[in-house]
Image 1 (cartoon, rainbow, N blue to C red):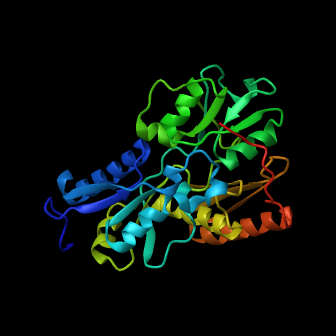
Image 2: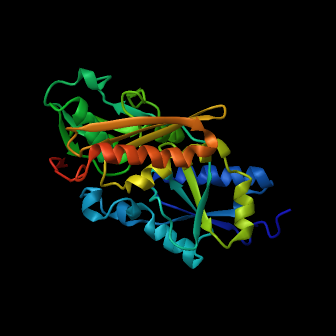
Length: 320
């Protein structure tokens, strides 16, 4: 039995970014905890924290610091006691947490695929040479240009609603969103085509929600254990070990996906030049318990194949 469960008078404070998708993820976390412990929603308080990445939307992430831009202020609030837990989109998370914080709780993973979004076309293959594509993801940009170097890519920063408005305004012929976000937001009416992972390998941890806590907070650790989804954790252990060995951030085009089949884990990984001119990929298969080791081993292979300087940045992306 967990002592001192939260109450409406002393609610558990859940920290999150303020986008509609981030709030949907925080609400899902609250709902799962409320169900697990038979608590009212009033026993939880959702605290919105604006991050640097949310405030600066007119420049590529590389220019302002990479992935930590979406987590730093939230983690500072967690360390200071301003919140009790932090809910994150795992594809935004750096592979290392600040001292004193632990990230070991994951909710069931959503659809991992990317979605091709366009009011006029249903696939990348239908785009005419020179067509304008909007994306803020270096991975998607590199994968797209590797497949279609004849296309023009422009920077598409902002939350899901902002990017959809830019598309409606004719800034680009198409863009990409994560199927997970579309599903969690229950957004209808958006013209989408899921892209097979064999055609566009997703970002590491795409579709997964992670919950961060203070390492010394035993009460919260016990509560979160009740909603942790073990298979998602097993998959992310392999993917994030792969990312960590590559020293991946928002500055490097990296894709990775682990899938489970019983006690067997299959990991696919890909690294690309930022301009899409070269791509290297590989895979590993083995026992689930060896997932992290497989991730590190696959990363080492791809690093050796790619050679030094592979990720050197050569920007040709226009901003809109």
